[in-house]
Image (tube, rainbow, N blue to C red):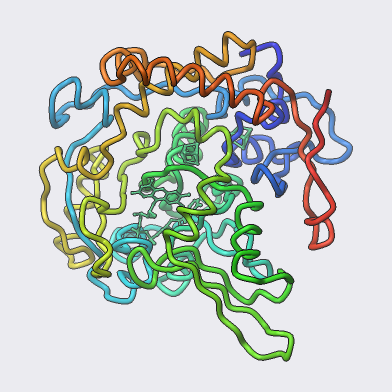
Length: 436
Ligand SMILES: Cc1cc2nc3c(=O)[nH]c(=O)nc-3n(C[C@H](O)[C@H](O)[C@H](O)COP(=O)(O)OP(=O)(O)OC[C@H]3O[C@@H](n4cnc5c(N)ncnc54)[C@H](O)[C@@H]3O)c2cc1C
Ligand code: SF4
Ligand code: SF4
C-alpha cells in the first residue's frame, strides 16, 4: 500500500474510490458513507472516532487493488479469451419471461428475474440491491428486497452513485442466503469481504454483476436535470435513467409551479451519451474489471443488436462460476428466463473495445506512477500484454500522453477532501475542497 494511502478516506481523497461501501460494512462503528456532489458515495470517519482502522480491513477495498481469479475448470475459449473476458462457463442471449419485468428492466430484465427466481424457487431470503432513494429520487439507497414488487422498484440501471456493499450486514443477519446485485467493483468487494468473513460467505446465495462503463457523479444528474429545465430538485417525484423500453428514456416526474404533475424526458443518447458519461468518477478510467469477473453471473445489454428499432429489451448473460451456470439453467427450466445459447465470440461483438481498454489501462497506471500519483495494485489482469498487442504505435503514445494531461485536468496529484451535500442548499453551496 502506498504511504499516501493509509485509510479509506485517503482512497477517496486520491480519487481511487469507486464508492462500493465495503469499508462501511467492515468498520460500521467508524466509517459512514456520504454523498459528495462531484465524486459520488464516499467514506468518512464518523464524528468522534479515531482514524485507527482494524488490521486487514483495508484489504477489502477495490480502490487499493484487485487480484484476478484463476481460470476455472471448463473455461470456454483459449487462454487469450480468458485473459480478455475472465471466467466464462456459458453465454446466452435472453430476457425475463415475465413481460412486466422485461419492460421495466434496463435491458432484458434478467437481473430482476434471476433475483426473483432465487427468492421464489431457491428459498433465498432476498436480494441486496439499490433503488432510487425515498424522498430524494436523484440519489440512491441500498435495500434488501424480498418479493417481486420490491424487486421491481429497483429495476433499471441508475447512472448515479450507489454503494450496495454498505448494507452487507443485512445479508449476514438474514436467516437464509441472499442474492447480491451490483457493479463489477461492488461484487469484487463482496468477494473479498466474503474471503475474510465466513458469516458473509455462507449467506451469499449468488452474486450478479452487470457490465459497467462507469458511474457518473451526482453532478452529472444535476446537469441532466438542468438540461431538462428543472430547477428545483425538491419538486422531483421520481427519476428513472433507463428501462420501460430498451434502452428506455431518462424520465423525471415532478410538481410544476402550479402544483400539477409534470414529466420531462431525454433519450438514452442525450442523457448518457451527451451528459452523464462525461461525469464518470476517475476510478472508472482505471478500472480493471468492467465485465463482472468476480460474480457468479454477469449480465449486459445486447448492444450488438439494432437497438434503434425499439425492440423489446434483450440481455447477454455469462455464467462465471458453476453456481452461476446451475442457477441460469434452472431459471430457464422453471420458466423465469427465455434464453438462446450463444457463441462466446458474441462478447467481442457486444463490447469490441474490451481488449484495447485493458491496453490503455496499463499505460494509464504507468503514467500515474511516473507522476508519483497513488495507483491501485492489479494482479493477474495481463494489462501489459494487451498494451503490446492491441494498440497501434499512435494509440500507445496517446495512452501515455492523455493520462499525463488528465493528471492536471482532474487534479489527480492532490489529495481532495470529501464534503457531504446534506440538502438542496448544501447541494449548491458545498464544494469538495482541495487540500494543497
Ligand atoms: C452505471 C452503469 C453503467 C453500465 N454500463 C454498461 C455497459 O457499459 N455495458 C452494458 O452492457 N451494460 C451496462 N450497464 C448495465 C445495463 O444497463 C443493464 O443493467 C444490464 O444489461 C442488466 O439489465 P437488466 O434489465 O437485466 O437489469 P434489471 O432487471 O433492470 O436490474 C438492474 C439491477 O441493477 C441494480 N442497479 C441499477 N443501477 C445500479 C447502480 N448504479 N449500482 C448498483 N446496482 C445498480 C438495480 O438495483 C437492479 O437490481 C450499466 C449499468 C449501470 C448502472
Ligand atoms: S472503494 Fe469501497 S471500500 Fe474502498 S474506500 Fe471506496 S467505498 Fe470504501
Ligand atoms: S467502471 Fe469499474 S470502478 Fe467504475 S463503477 Fe463500473 S465497475 Fe466500478
